[in-house]
Length: 491
Image: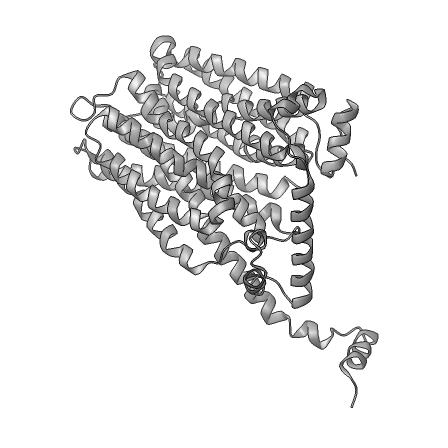
């Protein structure tokens, strides 16, 4: 009788698949199924992120009425953006907390936090309670914005990591689209119910419940388990998402080696900003974060219905029209996922900003030339849709990818923490001041201000942002240290 090695040798000589590989077909399918289950359940956090930030888009006009919360333009800005102020702090502290208690356990706690403060938002009796509740809800939004991508990346392999983690970004825009659809349905079915905004906000409890229950069916991150020296538990988890014992053993060794290296590497602190190349790389990270927000995407995602109403749509029609903005966001994100590994980062970034700038210029021109024309609302809708497909397909994913690529290991903790905080705080400022700008300047001049911000963002990207595609972290660090930062990729 031939040994298994002889069988495999004979099979290979006849260009046949070895028996062991044939037996891997079913486990591979099971592995793929398990990975998809983990991605779907954990990225419910991204869905919650999208729903809770997008739901205000249609609810704001209802809650602003005198018979409800009677919000001023200042109140509207704070109600809208309080969630992002909370998210800035949630994002800063979530990583440390999850290192202590685990990714899955923190996501479980955050799902309960979502439920509690979503309910408080939906029953808020006045603007003050609403603002405070939205800010506290933002802690959970910021938490999932950090933990879900981390959790997903720690389950994925290098071959699928980009697409696997990008699924969270897709779920965010799907969540925003879902919020727009629910708002449109409720707003058009219950046309005479001013308090319908409470049900719009309350809807967000449903995905939070799904996340809470779903987390019972997924394991803890294997990398976190290895961090806590729970090697046997980590191996059991990896057995459900990897093809064989050899792959598992290799991965465990690599993770343990990386963890040991991380312990040996001295992590940068704010004192290290005195070093020119460190200061420059952190400056670029902060610039990318601020740039992503001042381009103006969240004035579309938070105030899209208000913008369409101001341009001439009836409110109920604006709720329906805003769904098209959500569809374009999903389309843009899907396109970005397809091309991000094929096109240079700078090319995508500069091309995207060019598209958003032209879209905003169109809004300014249309709102002046076609003022009082029945065509105006449709022209504005076209421009916002163009803006969103350009932004979501390029600037949104590329900024997050570049932030993960420009910081070497010793700087990553500080760099990502500072950059993420500035990203969320810039989001807060844009959301807060947009209603006041519209109230004092009108739609045309307000969008002209954002045209200027887009031009500044383009100049910053062109002169300061390096190319990072196909470059190792060590190559990028060497370029910064030498002061010769390449704006081309490595083939």
